[in-house]
Image 1 (cartoon, rainbow over the protein chains, first blue to last red):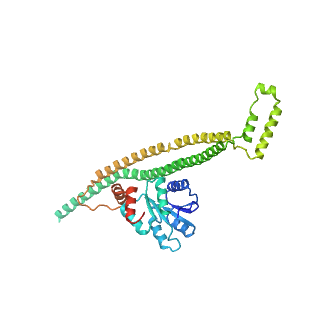
Image 2 (cartoon, rainbow over the protein chains, first blue to last red):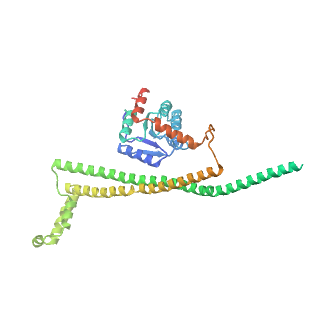
Image 3 (cartoon, one colour):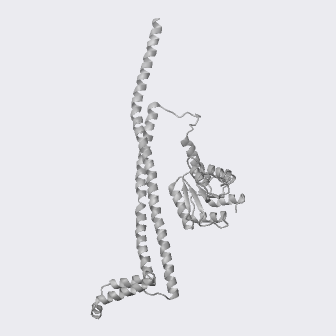
Length: 126
Length: 241
């Protein structure tokens, strides 16, 4: 099912500039209902609040990393089906495999373009 | 007994000399150590400042870029409206245009032909009729004037972006200061090495620290990091379409 432009999206990144860049690209792609979280713990709390249809997350963050948050999402019955796209500077093969094993929906390495983000969203929501 | 005492005095003499030399060396080392301890927080403060500076500069550029994006969306919408009006052949002067015309000073010929009050009255009547029909600001002339105003604002924003990018200069200046501090600390560490005669022993165990680990991670990421197309290939092997 194609992505609903009104879908609530959560952007999780410890760098405010990166959150803003991702949010801006999502806006250009037509998604205006975007919320932010500074780390995995904050992101998980927001997700448990309900209503989110998609998560875009960084890997390296303080308090709770992106991969830890991904595992927590997949282990939670209420939110385990939420698609999670990792956007990260962690570009090692073992990181990618770890993310796939943890149940990532897709994976983008930084630096990335708006086209790449759109392509991945289209793959997640065909 | 006398021989033992002589030997003991000689040993004590050597010990006193060693203590004196060590104290002098410690005094010599004290100044560089004291300088270094005051410089390191300074360097850390500079680094924190750099983070803040780059973050603020980037936010400013992004704010202006977002305003440009919004403005371009408005211009595109306006031009779309103008094209639709042209396509329908309905380009009637709107109320705003009529009012603008009325505000223009009349030519001497117009003055002779018409009393200015009559001109204004006529224009206002036309404007009122236009407003009743909901035509205010909807003719091609108004749309283009509106678009031109947006473009003028965009020019200002582009200049502001150029100005905002000057944060790079400030960053460069601070980096220069940091480099100076690092060189100074390096020189003082060398002085300490000379004073205490510290030497690297062959086969001595490597000191494990967070910095060492991070350096290794950085080196590893340089050597083995993947590009997006390789990531996609691997994802494909895992069944990602």
